[in-house]
Structures are given as structure tokens and as C-alpha cells.
Image (cartoon, rainbow, N blue to C red; front, side):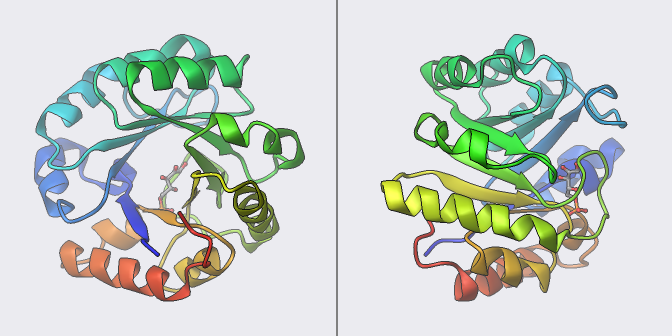
Length: 224
Ligand SMILES: O=C(CO)[C@H](O)[C@H](O)COP(=O)(O)O
């Protein structure tokens, strides 16, 4: 089964962004955290910066919107060419309509869940989405510890995706290391966002390979 590694540029050097994008050229997608200081207590950047990242990145963009009112803002990221745009279930007014509008522009649509958000309400929405992002830390900051209590939710999503025969990627984000990636893979993740674990490594290419190989060894047989 493939294991996708998406380094999070939240851990990059913002004034050397192009250099840091080159450092992760062997990864699958670059994870781009957009934060508005309202939905989460941190601020990163908006469409202008993401457009420049899109222009120079050697790999496609996996945009994660940690913002209020994604119904208003998400389409702009799809229009500038993001490969995938993920918004939070807790923030969207009409998640299905927004997913369909993103897909109509050509982006993969993702639904993100904070650690405390129950999975029951979103199971019926799975056929509408291309990926689901299970936050394994409280969104807002890099460098936090992985929350193992989110794993039953991931396992539940994996069972639901497999039972329905859906092609929905299951992504984890927060505190992913060479150790925690094993737990996440065993519980059904196939796509792994890692910030600190990649950018703090001296050799990012070797670290990406190590994470990918470790996940692949433990990935759930149903992984997409
Ligand atoms: O979405 C995020 C925080 O909200 C980051 O992508 C995530 O925390 C990754 O950073 P790290 O791997 O350092 O935990």
C-alpha cells in the first residue's frame, strides 16, 4: 500500500520558503497550513503567499484551511491551482456544497476534524470527499505531542471507508514522528503530515524515505 508523506511548511523557515520547498522535493505533497487567528490562535498566511508557493513548489499543494468561513475562502485556493483543499467540519456552513464546488474546479476536497469532534456526524458525508484529515493535535501550532486518543476515530473512519469501498484518503496531522507514524498507519491512515520531524532533520530526503518506509510497513491493508 502506498504511504504518502506530506511535509508541513509550518515548520519551514518562512524567509527561506523556496529553499525549504526544494528540501522536500521527494515528498508526495506539500502541506500548507492557512491559519486566520480566529478559528485557531495562530496566524500564518493567505492566498497571496500560497500563490507564490504554488508558483515555485516542485510538488503539488495540499492546502489545510484552519479558518472561519471556508465556504467563502476555500474556492480561491482551488482556483490558484492547489491539488487538494481541506477545510474544517467545525467551520463549514455547507460542507457537501463546498466539496462539490472544489471538485468542480478540479481540486480534491478534504474534510478536517479537530481531536474533540466526533466522527459519527461525518460518516454519511464520506462519499462526497476525496480525503479526511484527522487532527492528532489541537490545530494551531507545530511541535506538539501526538494524541493517541484520536486513534479510535481514525480506525472508525478506516472501517467505514473500506466497508463502503470508497477511495477516500485518510490523513493524520500533528506530532507525527518515526514512532507515532506506526500507530497512525496501524489505525488506518495512508497519508501523513509531518512538520518538525521532516524539517528538523539534517537530511530531509532521507527522513522522508524513512517515514514513508516505516508507514508502508505498518499500513492498514485497506489503505488507499
Ligand atoms: O496543522 C498543524 C498544526 O495545526 C501542523 O501541520 C502540524 O502540527 C504539523 O506539525 P508537527 O509535525 O510539527 O506536529
